Length: 289
Image 1 (cartoon, rainbow, N blue to C red):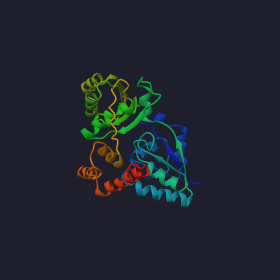
Image 2 (cartoon, rainbow, N blue to C red):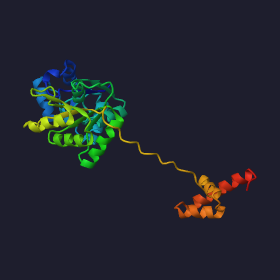
Image 3 (tube, rainbow, N blue to C red):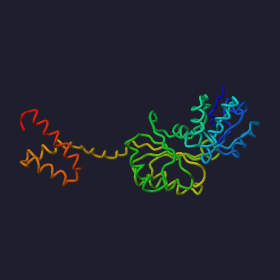
Image 4 (tube, rainbow, N blue to C red):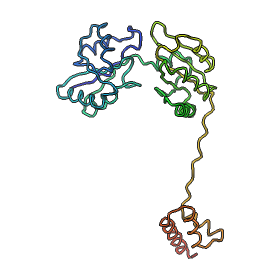
C-alpha cells in the first residue's frame, strides 16, 4: 500500500541528515520538494537520484491532490521535503499530507532537524511548556496585538523571522514586552551560527552593532514569565427581555409602558411582544396578574 514519508532535511549542517532520511529519499518513487533546485543540491551530495517534483505553497492545493491520486493509482511510496527542516512546520506540505490521508494513504514521519526545537534547547529557559507561533504578522498593529496577547497564552514563545525584519521585530518586542527575556538564534547548525541571550534591550543593542545581522534566518525564543498578562475583557452579560420587563414594572412603570421603553432602547418589537406574553403567562400561572 502506498505510503508518504514526511522527511526532515538539514537546516544547515549536512551531517545532521540521518541515514534513515537518506535511505528514504533513495527508495521513494518520487520526492515532492518545496524547491527542486535546493533539494537537487542535497541529492547530489548524498548520491540520491530519485525524481523531484515541485510541490510548494503556490501549487500545493492542486499538486498535492494530483500526486496523492498518482500514489494511490500506481501504489507508489513518496517522500515530502522542504528546503530545510521538517515539512509542514512553518513550511508547505500540510495540504499534500491531507490529500494523502483523505485517500487512506499512510503518512509516516522521518524526524530530524527542527529550528524551533534547536533554538529552545540552547535558550537556557525552562521549556517544559511552550507555544510555537511561526512567522508573526507583518503589519505593526497586528504584530503588536499578537505580542501583547502572548503572556496570557504561554510562558515561553517561539517565533521565526527573516533577516530583513528581525530588527523591526525586536524593536516591537522591546516596546510591547519590555520585561521579556530573549534568546535569538541565527543560522543554527551552520558555520557562523550565533545565539544572543538576555534582556530585549541588551540583545537588540548587540544586533544593531553587528554588521552581519541582516543575514541568515532567525529563530527567537521569548521568556514571558515576567511580563504582565493582558487584562481579560469583561464578558457582557445579556439580561433576558422578560427580566428587563419585570425590572421596569418593579420600578412602578406600567406593563404597557415597559414594553414601549424596551422598543425605544432598540429591541425588536416582535421580541418584546414575545417576552411580554411570557411574563404575562408566568404571572397568570402564579395568580399574581
